[in-house]
Image (cartoon, rainbow, N blue to C red; front, side, top):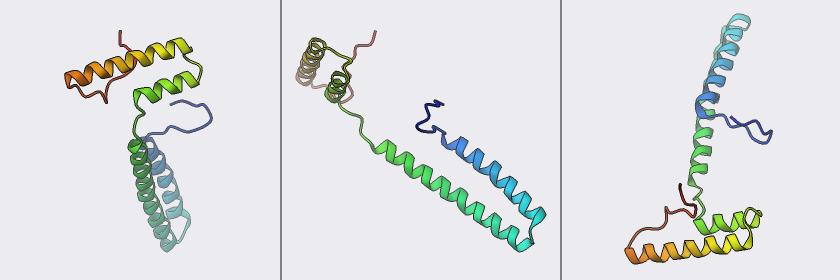
Length: 120
């Protein structure tokens, strides 16, 4: 988990553990201190909130998975725009990518999963 201060990165299991622990504390407190009718109402609200939390985390997770990964040329352009590559490095990488695409197309290979970077 990274704590860069911009976004919390809890996974689904951590969210449910936190939610259930807090719910248990509230339910036990309600059963001890409130009338039975209020305790049942609080318990029902907590159960609904657990299902709502589950639904929202599933929805957010599916929205994040629906975002397509950028193609290699877009990644290369982003790296060049960020200053990670010089113009010469950008041009060389672009030429390698175009050559690799042309060779793959001639060979009948799908290029969608290919990457610019060479693995060592």
